[in-house]
Image (cartoon, rainbow, N blue to C red; front, top):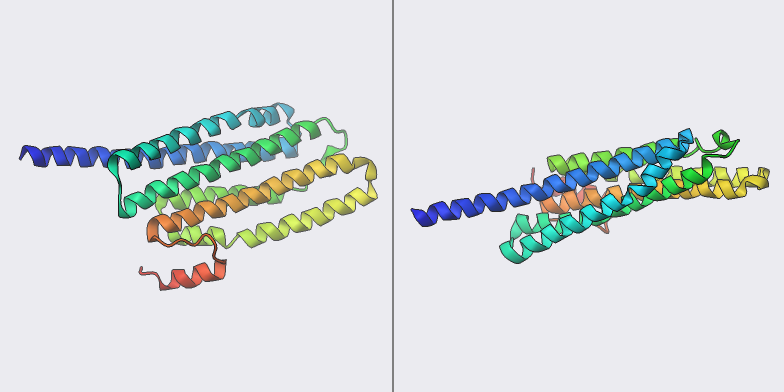
Length: 240
């Protein structure tokens, strides 16, 4: 009887550790999502102080990545998880790495927004990436929601949005190049805006990576190097 109670207690602590990991990832994700929203707002509104805040907040994300990774390493060493629990820990290690990179991209936008904030004619081009940035932020939010609910359908839907973000980035790049040819005196700032657009496109890519980890966690299927068509084909054959 005593051994049974001890085993139950150990199991409860283990489950609490895994749930704590999930909560930490969602907390980190919320911080990164806020970074992305603020970076876009700072760029579009020309808010230099907000841009500075975004650029400086990156260290918090870095610290969270190190902390969560250390927790994962500790669980692997002490608990030796198997099956779905092991997939959970592996997926979380990869997810926090992607979240840290999203934080890097948001900080980059913050730095560019600071340099663009004092331009007298900034309104004529800083609003260009707004739709792209909003789309990337929406993908990130959807990816975190899919993880919170362990929703494979939701993850697949977010992955399917990536080609749209890629097309919008290419269209925006062509538009900015046209502006550069028409207004060569603004080339430096146009390049900064394009750097922001590239950062948002990469945020979309990392959101896709997060969704691939959700699929791996729930289904045990590694879809990282598959096209959306191949993912959908596999998804249709997965058991409900």
